[in-house]
Image 1 (cartoon, rainbow, N blue to C red):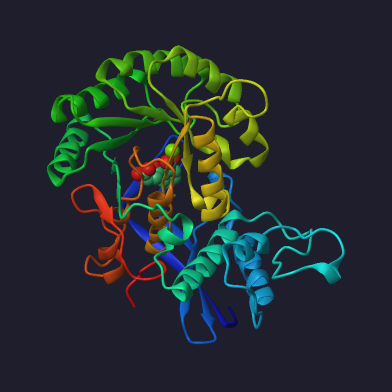
Image 2: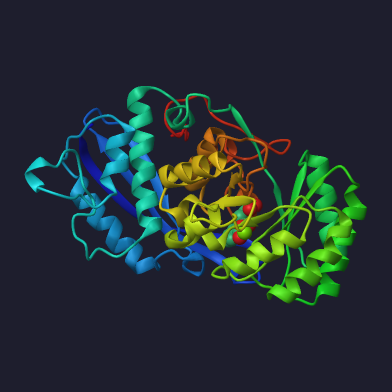
Length: 380
Ligand SMILES: O=C(O)CCC(=O)c1ccccc1C(=O)O
Ligand SMILES: [Mg+2]
């Protein structure tokens, strides 16, 4: 492919109402849209929405690194392959006269910037899949599924409102509900989880997310009490850097724990997966492409987890539709499709309901049916 033109535009999304997690409260999201144009006028799209509380770079670093990547890509010609895209983000070794393809990270002093890498990787993947005439999910895996199940993220605070929101989600067709917990007394969370379970009955999966907001002792107390209501899993019950605590809590509870914030640090991945010698610290991994630096690193992680007998699912990090589209294609390409993905956040933003891209990736009946068009399949 030949990148003849690059574009970078700021983007901003306002939430309908603030989203409170144990880690931060979000009112809006800011980031960048990237477009890459090839020699035949095709346009590949990518997006960065950094989430520094989850280990990505801040907004200003993100912009600088995207600019550096775009400069390195402009007027370059390279092979139409996933390998070429994967290699572009690695620091090349050895004799520079022997280097093949493109290299975006030649300068060692370019800061780590997973959200910036994500944006440029996604635009390259969209463009490559369009050039090859296949949906992005099929480019990632020949056995990709055509649709993905998603969870409903419930955002109310009080038990009654939460129960009402849960009822609406189940009536819409969602089979998995996700509730943010921690950052409040355990009694309050118990009242919330109980209200939801009573509202929706025993067949619906209830998934919790503590966003690292409990101490080990609190996590054990809370999860013992909340497990009474039947839990599918709990994301990140304890602090992200305490893998030992995660492992100890996992040994004490009957349902799987999912490592989310913990996997942002690449150095901890072998410990979490159990490939460093010990037991895995969690049974499931939450893959946020924005935090992991793109779809390809996330897919590698999922394949490694599957080899260890561990599960994985994809969630957005409260992103715009371009990122959510990419994450949906990744979810369809994961080795396991059993766990619902966290991609139904479009309705949390003040976006135009009739925007064709939002419509294409909005869950219907609790699932997203991927477009059949080449690339991301984002309508023009
Ligand atoms: O999983 C979902 O439904 C949406 C993603 C989500 O909950 C989230 C959104 C922004 C920041 C962190 C998280 C999280 O999973 O911890
Ligand atoms: Mg989470």
